[in-house]
Image (tube, rainbow, N blue to C red; front, side, top):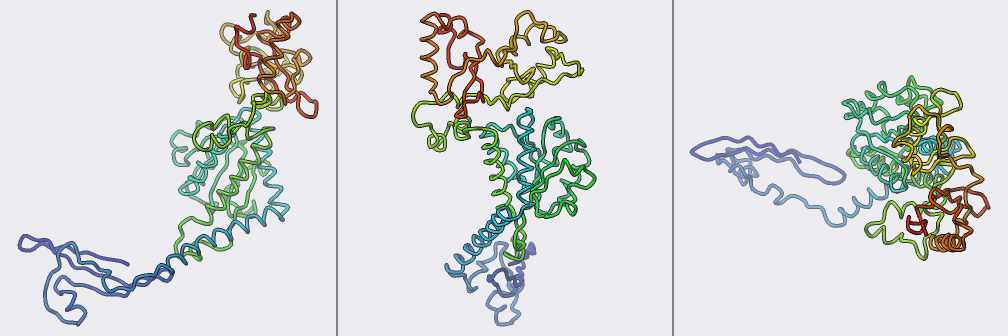
Length: 429
């Protein structure tokens, strides 16, 4: 209903004219009427012209109008729910049966997984309601230890572009695929930045988000809805479109966590210990040592800036800064633990080759001490103490020792610093 007030002042009081126009939306209907400043409501209804001004605060305009029953309200509510349910059903069927959609989903996981393993971040952007969905996506990724951040498109053009690093991936959420603030941002992005777009478009060629960019760096994740929101509800407020975007980004986050972590639940518990959720995922029984291990596949190899196959201390520190865990590898068969990185960063010559350091900081894989990942942390502690007390373990179970965590396939798939489970006093006994 549209109500127009025209205030006037007379004899020390404010008065107004009131005009009500007919308005109809999804079964709700109000008839047209008008109350003029010169006519009381009773005269208006009779078509008379007896001057009487209304006070500025008009009387209740809904008196005598048709009121919607409780059934009509529930019908409207369930219509919204059913419409969003149908949108989710269509999204499910699309990714269940369409090979191109499945290929794109796997490609998005591959791109974001590579970013995470290289120490980069998943940067997410979107405007309005899509931006809110993007922020929830970021929060879910961070709960699984997948480094992520939200970048507002407008703020990006005012300096926040600086948050994008060389190893990052950008995920764009926009149903239309032509949000002006997003399109304005595109030309300022690094040319080699991988893009993943969640949008209604089903064809990359028709999506303006990828115009002028290398197709090999672009991934389109379609999230269409069966009917537009204005067709379904009479108003274009984001509802079904944001519901499908939420479901698809939730699917991405959980699938990516499963790909990166052998036990996602343990990682989630580690980063989300508080509240009812933290209590609900609290581990039952002793904590296993594999739950605190860093996957060897997630440890980045040190990049030699001078391509001389002899990385320097600075190369190691730069790689460690981009590593999610702080671990780095000079080669596939050697590894440097975070505590060693901290030590060499305090006083070593940055241009000094790693291989020339007096104390060898990189540990060969053959020198890792193997422990089954299914063992509890307490069992590992007791075994180390027993070995040291017997005298046999003092030479190899000491500060700086790297524990190689053996998985169910009898492969060393993770690493743990001995200091993570033993304190200094125990290692001096």
